[in-house]
Length: 195
Length: 195
DNA sequence: ACCTGAACACCGTTCAAGT
DNA sequence: ACCTGAACACCGTTCAAGT
Image (cartoon, rainbow over the protein chains, first blue to last red):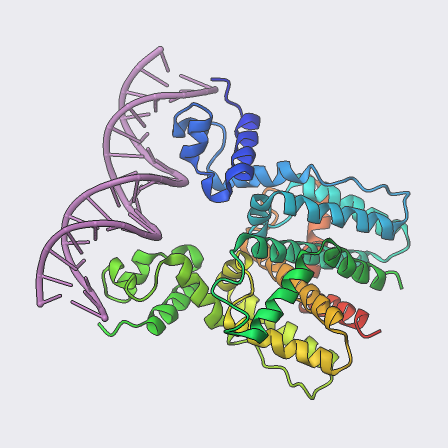
């Protein structure tokens, strides 16, 4: 039934995107591929390995930075795209949250970012420190945002019953959901590495 | 057998801390409590609710900020403790990654942080923006660090076979695992809100 | 080499019954 | 009110067998 690693991975991504990561089970995937659950194991060692493949495949959507561009602008462009990738694929964010950014594709993108910084005169140490901070910030802000989207908000919390908590939540929600909240903090972080 | 919500939650935390979140199943928990799996459902609606309770219970370990202290120092103290809490309880970080910081305890801590900032003359909007960024940064850096700790590192990656990727990973690992990496980026972010 | 069928050792949760 | 026993509808994965 024309089953290979690529179709397995692509179908997995499609299921996770459409119905959430919980819906992605080996049995569901097999059904989608019109095949027995065990057939998948001839192309992928197991579910963990499948998630690794999904992670790496998805990272290919990250932009490739231009090493000749302005490094602060390139950084902003890259991490805004990173953030957007997570928001558009919540299941991916969920997968990546538990997985080091160590796939071949992620590493290749990392090399480019590092080269960009070092080429701009930043020391090796500072460049790596900057990258780690920016990646951490991006992951955290994405997950934080997604977790607010996912849950039914203000459940059982009315303005009458708990006015302070209610107002705090409203304000946090408004800020966290605003597109610019992420970019604002990102710029603060990037700027701090400019000096 | 002396089963109440508190012992259920505390035992859950103990299992998750000792053996990881995956080991925390309703059946395993029941065994630990010397009770039938179904007994738990008379004290907690279900597993999701149990995870909510674990989350809120754990948040009680976060420090209470001193509203009369220097706000930059208080912020640093709070988020460094937050980071440490996650590192010491990886299962908690895993739970929180998928859950909004909206429990009663988290909200109470948030109120205090907000009061601290507003008391220092920061506008409401900026204060909320600062908190969201700092929380996002802290969550992301914690998860990023934990994900590197969890996986067997450099699996199948030798210096001979792929020298560039190998060196990049080594440098990232060294940076990410350094205690000061988190605090450094945190200070950059906090400082950016001082001006 | 690739796929199937049946089975194993698990999950969370429902439901009816006991005290 | 609190707990039990048996069952249901799932999981990921092993193993032996087919082609």
